[in-house]
Structure formats: C-alpha cells, structure tokens
Image (cartoon, rainbow, N blue to C red; front, top):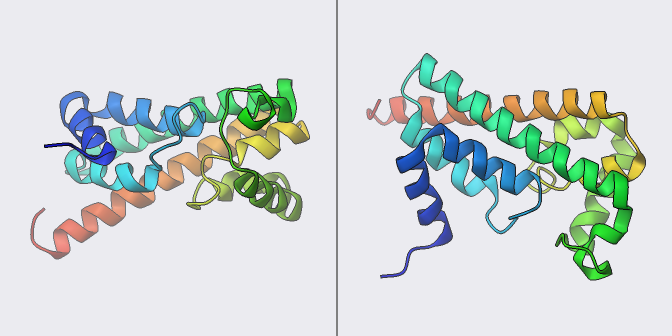
Length: 171
C-alpha cells in the first residue's frame, strides 16, 4: 500500500526523532522541499516525541534550529539572487507568484517584525524569508526574529499537543 508524504515524514520522525524534525523544518523553511507544510507534520511529530518538559524542550529546540537554519538559507539566496532565484525566472526555487505577493504585501504592511509573526502563520511560515531577503533586511535582525518566531511556533505546537493528549486521557 502506498504511504502519503505525511506518513513517510512521521515514520522518519519515529525512526530519527528530533533530528528528523530539525531536518524537515530546515527543508520546508529553506524552500528546498516545500511540498509538505510543517502544519501537517510538526503536530504529529510533537504527539510522537513530546512527553514532558524535557522532551518538549528538545522538540522546541529542534523546530527552532531547523526553521532558523532553513530560513537563513532562503534569506541568503533571495538576498543575493533576488527574484531570479524563483523557478519561473530560471532559478531553482518554486514559490507561486500568489504566495510571494501575499508574503511581500505582508512584509510591506507590517515591516521587519512580520518575519517574527510570519513564522506563526500557515500561509507565511516558509515564504516570509523571501521578501525579507529581497528587501535587504539586516541578517542579525532576520536571524533573531526568525529564531524567536520558530521557537514560539514549536512551543505552541508542543503545548497544544501535550494539553490535547492530557484532555483525552492519553498523556
């Protein structure tokens, strides 16, 4: 029987734990493998890995490290190559014009802080690095905002999953 991409990702999390979470979030945030949004895999990974404060902290750290590293990769590529990095313009990255326009509008409206808040929103999580790179945002500020947003996302998912499991009597 065929497995969905989400099932394959969760099987990898079962086998490799926090390393798989960090790798998956890196691939998504870097736009190297944007086919499976973190909103699909990260809650399932939290359900598999988070069983208390220590495992919750490891989970949050793996989401934070993976997302921040991937975000820096995309930020650097779009900061250096601009829109030419997009696949429709001869580049290697596939970001739809619609997603790019939404992220750019969000960035213009809310400024650099949108990098932090964008890490918490499903539509912008992986693409907010693009307008930040195109705008030439300071790398230190981008890194700080990305890491803070990624850690907050990981913590919110871990808390929600842990709380949900306790409510249904599993944890």
